[in-house]
Image (cartoon, rainbow, N blue to C red; front, side, top):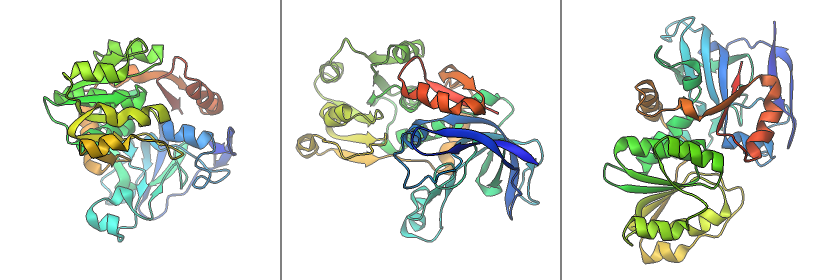
Length: 337
């Protein structure tokens, strides 16, 4: 039986075609894909930045929500279960895995990047990587669980707690979700963003915004009485933000690098030295982050539904990528299968 799938053909090009429905291997379930999110990593793939990892003809998609068609015996899953898939494949033996950082495995493979992902009608995925979605979450909300798990991980790794302050550089989907997770924790949070559409959305979600009319360094100084924020998140991927992100943080504060910077960029390391700052990367997630993300979305503690700007069919993936890169009135685009 044939199914539709989207194939990466090199920088700036996706095509849609047909391929045989996969046969699940040992320990794998056959999934009927329902939603796949387009994220910043996918945009880097589209621009050719990850050609060293994504093969020509590869199937991307790591923000995948699906329904179980068949599952292996003893897996705990049955036909009709609604699931998300943790897309990280680790070796279980290297130093990172031994430390508990399996999602940073030295031989890490990410389904939808290094290995075929969910941008297709049917997908065979390891049952051990599937997490059940409660009935209280509708399909669109379930399509945002993966980026919400990223945000949960970023905030947890930064060590934020009630009463702290955070400044998020970048109000795209991940930056917005980081801010909403912070707000739910009782963290005082503001988001620096330039896109008017996103600024309006951030404000509609009850978030404080540093827009074009404010100098972000002056804002941080006034907002914290000259002290600096506890944590600054760099989520833009823009060298201009990376250059100043250390300037807004208090003594012994933390800078969290969430965005992918495809090239080395200047950072003000004097401030790192002078205030004894901590700079940390925040890349993926572990199982507990997924479970917390599902809880936050299912209880409406974090409102994810407003982030869905539009849903597109698989055949429109190319145009969806171009529109997301265009910087217009777009937040989150979901591919609906």
